[in-house]
Amino acid sequence: MDKFLIEGGHLLEGRITASGAKNAALPAMAASLLTDQSVTLRNIPRVRDIGTMRSLLDELGVDSSIKHEEHGNRLEIQARQLLNPVAPYELVKQMRASVLVLGPLVARFGHARVSLPGGCAIGARPINLHLKGLEALGASVRMDHGYVEVRTDGLRGTTFNFDTITVTGTENLMMAATLAEGSTILENAAREPEIEDLANLLNAMGASIEGAGTDTIRIHGVSSLHGAEHPIIPDRIEVGTFLVSVAMAGGHLVVDRAEVGQLTSVIAKLGEVGVKVRANGPHELEVEKDGTLCAVDISTQEYPGFPTDMQAQCMALMTQAEGASVITETIFENRFLHALELMRMGADITVEGRRAIVRGKTPLSGAKIQASDLRASASLVLAGLAAEGETVIDRVYHIDRGYERIEEKLNRVGARIRRFSD
Ligand code: EPZ
Image 1 (cartoon, rainbow, N blue to C red):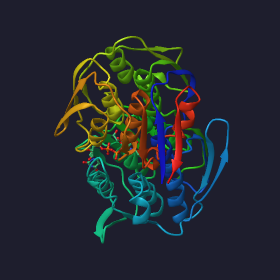
Image 2: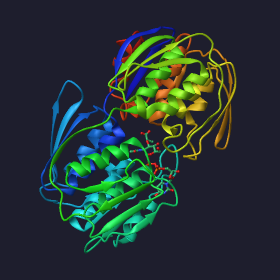
Image 3: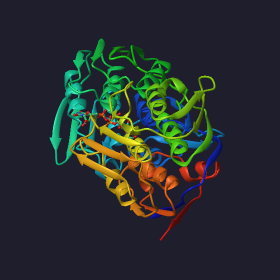
């Protein structure tokens, strides 16, 4: 099991490149199930979750091939036929985004048997709204020994309103509706950029979708979809993580192949803290730490609000800011696991339910700590950059799920991170 040994106190200086967004690539891979023709995805990030999704497609009997390119991988997928419409527990428990095959399988083949994902470190992660939406489209849903069995003789368009805004729920139903008879309206839909990217792919495949990126999405069903080639958007959370890394370690970075417009809430919040972020055009950001950081309150919201996937990284940042910061996690019920590890490094944090109070500035000292989930791991790496002495982070497989060799990218701009295993 790999670990990181981080030597704190080194300024970051230079240029760092964003990879493709894991949370755009995963639904795009699932979307390839909607056609028997070849779908080519580019700018695919080299992260573990992509490998897990490929294993799942392989399990379903779907061919895929990958080719290394300068920016990310090129992934070709062709779901000519389906040998086995089952997403097994062994894979789904590794990655709950496996549930994204549900909508496409039901729409194309009329049947899917997907293990219930179960909870994870950050919360219960139910999929009740995915299932309620598929029922509204005319599918039958049955629970069976930890699996959900979904069948239909043909999906029919409907109007469906989400009780709670759900990113993968919106993606699953948008994909399913592309092959439904008639039109579907999704109300109170998630507005994340990854949803807009998925709609762009689906429309390139012959779907007819309007309004993706807003809270109301209209899908006009078509009889079949064809192949397409599509570049995955940059990972806005990876970019946000790099912006915070400079605020923690000091220095100056240029982040390229970014999508500046997707980061307005993060850039605005960092500006309040006193981190100087400048856009050099729509795809490049320049960031530097310039003097004292001041504590700000943060409340996570659905897009375009402040992203929950940046909360852990900013909690680490608040330990280095002067004053008290109140962080409210409105999306997930248990997303403060990183607080306990930051406290072992010297942070002053009080957690009360979905609210955490960070009192800074407290010097951080290197310690042996443990990663618990993807973004919590990122916050611990950031804390290690700022800490005095050496930090050892265990279970870095969590971070490899969503960051492409983060230690290589950061070492190229001055960090000292060594990956090793017992
Ligand atoms: C997506 O997860 C992302 N994952 C998450 O990123 C991200 O944190 C999250 O959206 C919120 O932005 C992918 O895109 C693969 P939700 P998702 O459904 O879709 C409740 C990362 O770090 N809910 O939007 O699973 C749910 O409990 C990951 O890359 C229901 O109640 O999140 C939560 O409280 C972590 N019923 C809220 O909605 C449902 O049927 C938002 O969850 C579905 C969701």
